Length: 263
Length: 307
Ligand SMILES: Cc1cc2nc3c(=O)[nH]c(=O)nc-3n(C[C@H](O)[C@H](O)[C@H](O)COP(=O)(O)O)c2cc1C
Ligand code: FES
Image (cartoon, rainbow over all chains, first blue to last red; front, top):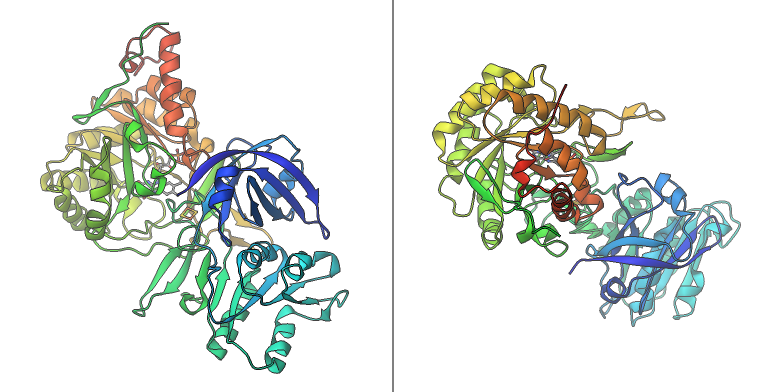
């Protein structure tokens, strides 16, 4: 069930690295939300004609719904000026997220930048403990490590400049872990971040024969499946390729169904 | 307070409880918005363009925001008429709202084939004939920019269906009055206008169009004054009713179209921003009518005064 809710801003604070967190009072959406789902947000400070912006849900606790963002575009730059008490229209919870259900695999989360938000939500909702890889350019961009540590996850960090954790790309850290990991349950990857990272993880999942769930980002119009603007190429079980909507069939897809190159 | 104004209109023989529809391509096939708005409270719903066979549409990026508007090149992705009929018509039939099926073809014959198929499908109130899509390499707009071709395709479809026929005209033609007359003479029961306006946005860093298709169709508030002018010119040229659209997001926007001569309006892009837009437009028109002591919405249609 999709809901539309007038949500009051309860809190708006800066994280490190230019990231920010907004806490909305959105009791109905919050109670229905699952990890990997998103809300489509109308930013009241933008012009009346502006599109909504999709944000992954970072946390859903009772009446409170948290999203995390970095001001990068026109919408998020304006959102920086949100104040406590402002009212935002949210549509949600939207999309098909990650499964937090028990399985006999080892959950391995891989996050690039603010892609860590839905994964933190996932780790909190999972009963299993796993391993998380958080990567970014530099130390201030590494977020939410405590979210995972506090629920008993094994946290790995990599920065491109070496200012925190291992030096290099997060996929390098992941590869080193893969090469040396002790015997145990088969890894299952859950990831969110830039498209390059998603492609790299698709290759690794394929190589090792692991299940991987990747959350994708696309420009969105309606956010609810009506406009067909947010599509990603998939290959179905019958081998036939088709366009799936990131807002409805996604944003989380099984890596083995993704088709990255499309002529 | 005066009594509630009469909002009913009759377009192409279809009685609608009010003159506000959802525009094709912006409301899917109905179920997408059903959680968020009461479809039964709408005058009608126009579904996304349907072809005889499934169609893939364009490679992404398919959409980008523009000042006061939206540029899209979806490329008419759709499941094809058979899947649409089996999967979505049962849902649409359960609702008390006019169902207008937007159709298109890659060839003239294909337009006829789709029209004929819908002729005996229960629950379809009218066909909207898209001869004005800017996002197709073949078909679409090429049928709507030459009056002779437009006449041919409308006449051909007219012979293949008993359903009311509503050609959707392109805003790019030189003389809209001429096209409106051509549509009327070729057997159209009403006219829809406007479709999106061909436009382009360029990413200067990459020196490439933002949309993979290059050109897209501009919609939203940015095109409203263009649409109002075209509706006004078309309405003066023909007797058949006009469904006006282009950038409507409130009652006053809709009233511009009605006053210019449209008998009904459709809301497109604005639904993405606020799913309740069309229903708000209905109530804002009602408020306007009460304020101006008008008993019926029909009393405002075509009442533009020009000195
Ligand atoms: C994403 C999108 C998809 C559309 N798809 C169709 C379509 O399939 N067939 C059609 O006739 N018009 C299509 N249109 C045009 C709309 O029906 C309408 O004519 C146009 O958007 C102007 O109205 P608006 O400014 O209120 O959106 C589409 C518009 C948008 C924004
Ligand atoms: S954003 Fe409209 S279909 Fe996904």
